[in-house]
Each structure stands twice: as C-alpha cells, then as structure tokens.
Length: 577
Image (cartoon, rainbow, N blue to C red; front, side, top):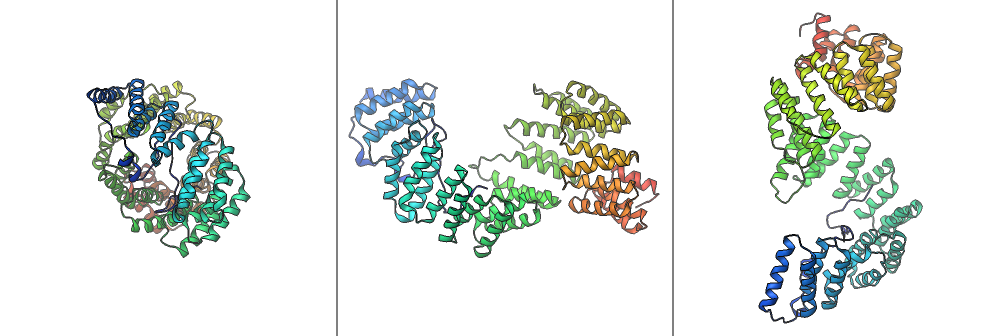
C-alpha cells in the first residue's frame, strides 16, 4: 500500500510527465526571473514583429519556426525569458533535445533561476545520462534549511525514481542521502528505495527506524504500513497510530481503505464518517461513503452522500473529476425505490467522454423507458446506438431482450437472444444472459447447454455454476449435482449473498431445514433482497413459524410488490398479506 500524502507533509512532487514534458511545480517567487537579472533590451519594431509572428504561428500548430525564432532572439538579447519561452515550446511539442538546448541557454543567461534548474533536472533524469543531476541535487540539499530538507529529499527521490537507469538512480539517491542518514526523512526514502529493489528486510528496518525516530510522523507510519503489506498487520499499525494521534487524516484514510480491503465495510464507513466531520465537503470521502453505504444496503445514506458528492463537484469549477459514475449509481438508487422520473433526471445530467460510462447511461435510459411502459420507444432509442465494438453490440442486444422480457414478451426476448448468442458464441456475459432467458422461455435444455459453455470458457465464473445449480434446485431435480455446483460457486465467491441464498434453497429442497435456515439468514443479513426473504420465509413456514414467515414476506412485498417469486409463494400457501 502506497503512503498517502498528508496535509503539510513532505510529499514528493513530480518533475516530468515524460521525457518531453518537463514542467515541475515551483514557488511563485521563482516563476519569473528577478528583474535585476534581466538585460536592458531595446525592443525594435522588427523584434516585436518576430515575437508576435512566432506566437501566432505556434498557436496554429507550427513548432520549428517559432522555437528557432525564440532561441535566436534569446541568444541575441541575452534575455532568459526568451530562452524560457523556447523551452516551453519544445516541451509542448515533445521535443526533448530541443527543450534541453533551450534550457541550457536559459541557465547560462540566468544561473540563479530555480525554475530553469528544475526544468533541466527533469530532462536530464529522463535522458540516458543522469550524472549531471547529482551536483544540482547535492547543492539543493546542502542549501536547504534543516526544516525543509526532508521535502527536498522527497523531491529528489520522486525525481530519480523516474529515471530509466534505476540502478544508477538508486545509487545516486543513496549518495545524496548519506550525509543526512540520521533523519527520519532519510529512513523513509531509504525504506522506499529498498522496497523498489525488492529488499523487504532492508525496507522494514528503515521503516521501523523512521517511526522510532519520530513516532508522531504520519509519513513514517504510512511507510511502515507500505512495507508490511499484509492487511492485518497494516491495520494493527494504523489503528495503534490513530489511538495516539486521532487527528492524523492521511493515516485514517489509509486505515479505512485497509478495512475496505478486508471487507469490514461497517468499520470502514465509521472511519470515513470521522474524516467527513473534519472535512464535510471532501469529494473523495463523500464518494467512498456512498459506495460503502450501497455495500451495507443503506440506500438512503448512499443517495445522500452521492448527491452531496455531485453537488460539491458542481460547485467547484476547478474540479475536473467526472461525476458520471456517481450519477449512474444515483439513477439506480432512485429506480430501486420506484422513482423512475428522478432516475431519468440523474441520467440526463451525465456528460462524459468515457465511452463505457456513456454506453451504460444510454442503456439505462432505454431500460427506464421500458419500465415506464414505453417499450417501443426504448427499442427505437436502442436502434439509434451505432457502434463497431462487438462487446457494445452485445450489450445493446441484451438490454433490448431484457426490456422485452420485463414487458412479458418472453418469446420475442428469447428469439432475439438466440440470434445474438449465435453471432457472439465466445461472449460469456451474453451466453449467461441467454441461458437465463432460455429458462424463462421454458427451454431448460438450451439453458443448461449455454451455462456449461460459459463454464467451459470461464471456469472461474461463479455465476454460471450458481445459476445452473439453482435451476436444478428450483425444479427439484438432480439435487446432489445442484449442491456440487453451488458449492463450487461458493468456493470461488464465499461472500456472495446470492450464492448463499442458492445453497440455502438447495438445502431446503434436500430436506435440511436447519442448514437451509442458517444459510438463508446469513445471506439476508448481508443483502436484504426480496427473493432471499421469500426463500427464508418459506423455510420458516415449513418449520411451523408462520408469523415469522409472513413478516419476511411483508418486508419483501414492501420492497418489490411485483416480485414473481413472492406472488407464486403466496399463491402456493394460499396466504394473503
């Protein structure tokens, strides 16, 4: 796990995007050359014309002519600003050699320019020969005040770790750090260098030295967490640090993420809630809380957090994050509570360049049209979606079939999927959906063949094993094979509540009511889905616990009044809720 940047912490700054883009961060004080370093240039009309023409040509996409003009004028006038502009043009055009030539002239004309040195360092490190960087970095470290030297160390590390020759860069970094070996920051840098080399014992020793030297340092704690790697050990270290330093925001964020990795979603949400109290409009925290709330079946909370997330992004014109995925989730949440107009409204707000998200929004638009009763309008809308991508074409067809099936036109949906499955026989998602559609159309042999084809092509697809096993259990046939199939699905995805539900249903069909109840209760605790409630209710009914069964069925009806499994169950037991 990578250490997270903390507020005011010595976090590394990138020097270059690549060999051709070298614009590091710098202080405002160094953004322009000091006036006393500038020559007294007599601006002639000819020179003004050359400068204006160069800038206009550059804006039109010409690079070579404007660059040469700026470089030539810089040599003539000795003005470092012109050399800087030539360097900027070369960087924008991704011409590393030309950029380096202009930056060298810039440094000659203004040796004191920190910005020129940063540009130069960025390009040198990305070149084949990083040696010239050592003296500059050594001087920077020596001249830095003790309180700021750690930041310079981190900057040097970030810069050198981008070098093509990793061994040479690592050796240089060690030489640079050696005079400051007794500082916490040096131990952090050396721990990360050891990790990059695969030296885990060395990394652990350096990380422990860093935290021992400065026990209240967030960056030291995060480095130790990064070195430990094992989530349980990481969680222990971070939890202990938070006990002693509860205001450590970056450590708390890292701890929350480890809890997510461990699927301890409730505990993770608690950590993010603490973070949100400190920063109520932090987009990352709001988004994380929205996701975690959906995992915990707290749809109301998820809507609140994601709505705030979207609002915060909308109120900050400088925030370039794309809210489209959050908008998709909000649309789904609104649909789940039956508010189709609001669901469509969220979709209408989506503006994205991500083709997959765009397609997802379009498919959901069609699904909502179908749910609103406009089946033909939904199909016409889908027909307007043109793409050469085979996967996208399959998704469009699957969506149309789903709309038809939901409208009760099962045979049309099956025939549509049958043709599409023949066109894309290696698309396992499509084959899986086709299998489910075949079962709804009463074509159980076709369903089994399709699911076995999915299993053959994707042996780790738990959904295929689960669907086939559940189908056998639902029809009360081949129960031993059903058990083996669902058990295989559980081995692949042991925490999936829907597979637990299938296992509970298999156990019920086999007459094992206690085992069935245990599985179904576990599944329902993880996911309060109406169908799981229907199954658990039936098991309780057969045990003579009819009041408990009816309470579960009422909960299912409140969430999904049109649920087919609920209707059929109530009809079989002649129960009116």
